[in-house]
Image 1 (cartoon, rainbow, N blue to C red):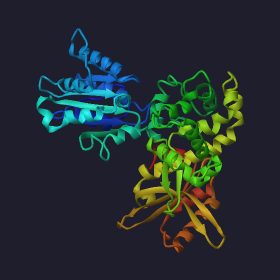
Image 2: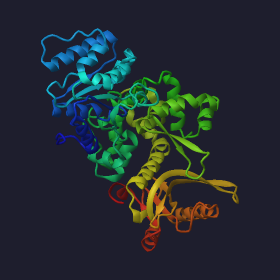
Image 3: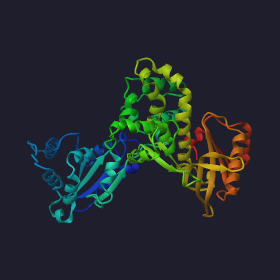
Image 4: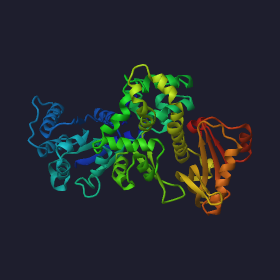
Length: 489
């Protein structure tokens, strides 16, 4: 089944959805589609139902009676009936839904925003489970039912543990954000530095280009600051309040003030639970639940230190949320006044570079190393890429490593393939390499590295001539600039 014209990327998602929609067999089946908001799930499923002649119902926040009325009317329209179905409960509605494929060939049936229905009718997953039981399949037709929702934690619980639908799904599809390379292609930004600057603010969420900016993109380095003022910090544009609304749209987050405070602490560089607790003036144990919930809904990630298993860091997963808490929230009163955006943006440049751009560049470098770097670059296949901390007992200090690559070399031996440093605003020279060499010697003494562990320098501003000449002679030293991040391996 050909992908619709105009659909960007999503080749894997489209192939899996069409495979599921055309599964042979007379039994009804279940699939689950999830992912964070604004990633194009509804667009994908709408295209699927159009291509297959299927049925799609998008739920809204309502009572059970109202939802049943809307569902009955939508099902009747699809059936070509002049009057809507009058269902007294979801048992009747699901039974009728399972009869859609009455001509014997598979029919796709999509229920979008399923968490809204389940919130108003908690037994609904059990009703669907009973309808899929072998004992009920004799009255079913080959309906390919797809439940979709943006509440990631809720959707994952549908199929976990002792949940009614556990073991029932033949498809579990997560629609992810676009990675930094795909995002640049989608935004049609060809200059690597401009692409990375833009990605540091809006990430890889497709809707931020289409619905939220109506195709307004930075045309190049000289237009980036003006674009931020007119498209992101402009109180008349949808992106302006998106950082706030993302939390409000998550049904699991009840005390939004607390969650905003936790995110603000992380955005300001407090990545450990203890650091977050100190920033908020709370006990570390008080944050176990909010951190767990934020992680469940995909708002933050929890990453173990590359060298110390007992250390870990929390990071915000959505760049726009980091940008909101670091740049926008402290100046919200000024930004709400029309015409103030350019002046505020000028004042927050150092904050943007240190709190947003620097950490984001480091993460992009880790992503590139994990998914795009060639075998020859790293001297092996990467298995885990993370940041880490290396102790220096002699100097009584510790050193931060932005990129640590564990994997297997060409002989199949596991170990530390490379360590790297990422500097967005620095022209890197011999001093940076000397620092990495010192860290490598410390790790070698600890039995965590070897003299063959490679050194990688990531810079957004370039490298000195003598460092470039050294890299040409020494393949164990790799220099990565924005052009190579976006176009090379």
